Image (tube, rainbow, N blue to C red; front, side, top):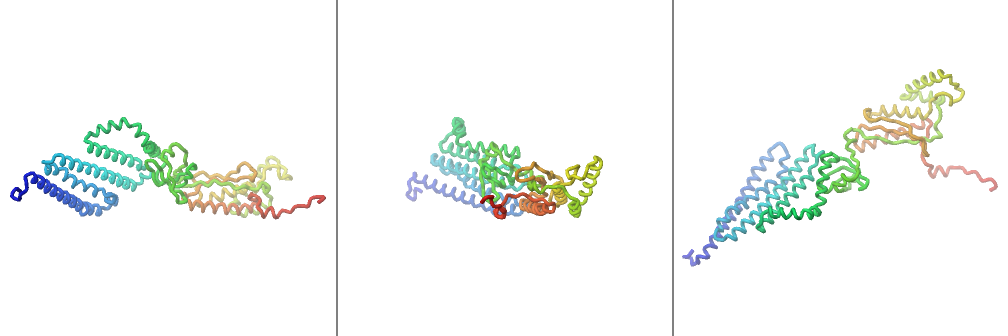
Amino acid sequence: MRQLGMPGAQNIYVVAGLALAAIAILAFLANFITRLIIHRIVKTVIKGTATTRDDILLRHRVFERLSQLAPALIIYWLAPQALAGFPQAAALIVTLSFIYMVVIGVLFLDGLLNAGLEIYRTFPMSRQMPIRSFVQVGKLLIYLGGFISVLSLLLGESPVTFLAGLGALAAVFMFVFKDPILGFVAGIQLSSNRMVAIGDWITMKKYDLDGDVEEIALTTVKVRNFDKTITTVPTQALINESFRNWRGMQETGGRRIKRSIHVDLSTIRFLSDDDIARLSRVQQLKPYIEEKTRELATHNDKHGIDPASLINGRRMTNVGTFRAWLEFYLKNHPMISKDLTFLVRQLEPVATGLPIEIYVFTTTTIWTEYESIQADIFDHILAAAREFDLRIYQQPSGADIAGLKISPQVGA
């Protein structure tokens, strides 16, 4: 160098510059080689496996992020030797390279948690025990640790010093992170008590919520309503307030039908012999009518009942026979469960007539099938009521009022 006319002081800069250039080339080669290994070897191995769960690691670029540590390590190890004559510059480059490694480490762990969450969701138990809130807490701690590490490197202080300072600021952090903390605690309660899981159908009147749970996060629960809108509610709201979970109905395999028809009281009467003969032609009623006729005749003969009056003794009524037919009809319906609660009952008469309540369960929980079954059953029941000379109550309509004949007032 001296022969080239360059002063000795400049030789140091030239050597340092050449050394840094060499380090940069080595860092580039390290990055290239690690990427090549990932794309050629790791990717080939993963694609060749039978399971698709390991493909999730590639999709979240877990290995690609990890490969970026290679150039940072080259710089971290070789920069102090290359810049031996420049301790301050060497320290700065080492610090920056270490900060870069911390950032890459944080991003790697972030991608690993994302991939782990997606892999966990491929297992059936993920619907019962969602862990998204735990993953979010883990991310929060990772990013907080990364931030403290970077700050300590820039200021040249120990991370313990910052952690001690955080203890003094605990009240401030409790206020700032109030929602995440409450959401995390609520998420633990929801998961441990199995109060709600992914895929559950829940209803919550306060939030006009009626649909399937799609996501349980750290601070919110996302629900897709049946009208395809999405409602988000605070996670702690599911702990502090009441909501209905239809999981029990889905697990039993049957959905309840609980509906009443109101019979006009003026159409309820005793059955005549002609009525009994006519209704005996109904296949489902014939055994009932024959057995009931014998039972009533035996009872009335035993107690010497005078048949001259209809209210003497015991007699069959059209509404009682109608209720018996309802039981036979529903018990023989292929889509009505025989194992769950089965009830056809008469309720207290009200202003709209005599309620006959049907309380049964279908053999399916699919909404569209359930509605179709319920509609078919009540179509048949409403039409069949006329065969018993019963009229189903409905409020007078405009046509009913228009058909009324009003007598002229006297003296008009």
